[in-house]
Image (cartoon, rainbow, N blue to C red; front, side, top):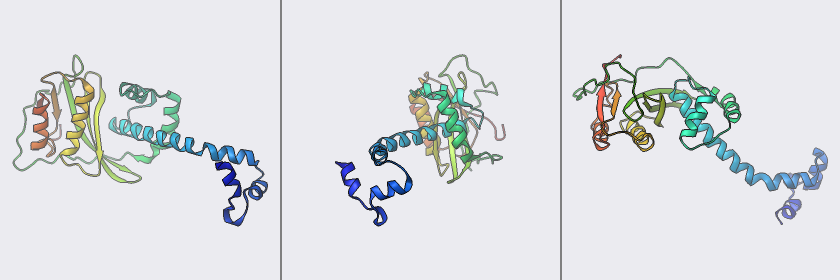
Length: 223
């Protein structure tokens, strides 16, 4: 029925039959293309969502992740994606992120309460869910400047929590921490190590760490 209606349409004052003759395509081919349009839109939307996830993982690794590690990270998140598809999407879309020399986002609050350094530059862990490190990165994209907060499990060396926004207020690393806690099966007393940025010394971030039963750790500025 839809095809019959389409055949009666006159785009630009011309009939579909006339336009098909001019473009040297069959009317049946046109109707097949028209019928498949909703399915193509669904596939495109799903691919756009996948590209967004790949961008986050790639940016969180500061460009270190290739297709194999992206595929592994997606699999841990419950997404089974063919590696060749990931390679194609990275070739087509990764140029949208421009890596520049990172500006330090660490800004100490005037009356900040600093946590002790429980890591002491030993960035290893014997098992997952015991030691995390968090950081925030400024990214310049085709759509403007954004900020990415990440949580990395030191045992697996994998990003297990992230959040992205056009600001770097405390709610951004809090969101990343909540994702890590939901996906990472963290042990009671798990260490969360960060720099001394105002986002990490905020009451909001410290409160979330206490709520999750974690221990907060901080390095010095510039470490």
